[in-house]
Length: 240
Image 1 (spheres, rainbow, N blue to C red):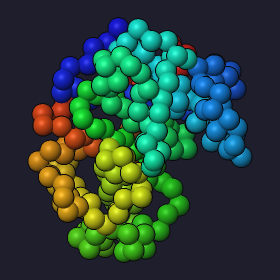
Image 2 (image 1 turned 90 degrees about the vertical axis):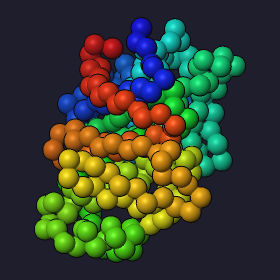
Image 3 (image 1 turned 90 degrees about the horizontal axis):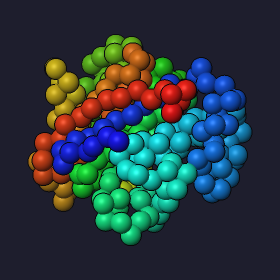
Image 4 (image 1 turned 135 degrees about the vertical axis):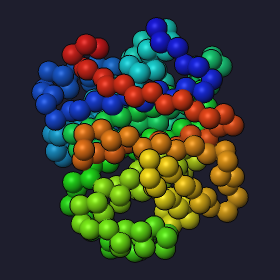
């Protein structure tokens, strides 16, 4: 069994493109009836695969730190859809987690900090980074993207997007929060500068970015009084 320290943020990810029907079927065994129903609503097999692997990854990750079986976890959601652990055990209920998946890649994080948000995105998606940034990002973010050539712009856009979504997921409102009101600058040596929305104290928020395979970024937001210690792990479904 693994241990979470007070300042630990453990991040787990899994590449899914190589996984076949057998791995997806095995992952689906731990899912709840409601999760299986949500999985089956996806039209494309790749999306059903990623959903199943992502939710199984979360359940197995939580089980790595507790004595609870992956299939026995129960969750509740707030009005914006943010999930939390549904348990009367205060030690279990104290675990914050976040889950994200994009085509071919899934990720989750766990911590004892007050709030956690995780987002994973691919930089090679067909998106108009400049147009989206001009409409939805802060002026400072949009201006920084305009100064870059195409390939660096796509990567930086992805980094900013993951940070924004991770922040609002940690807050608990997801993308119903304003993209422009939470502004980020990614500087040399991966220093992340945060200009928060009104009412948020920047000193209580901590962020990090991880390059998973050159074309994918994992963004993390943590709300806590302590400086977090991030650890990244890759999950192998065959070894689960």
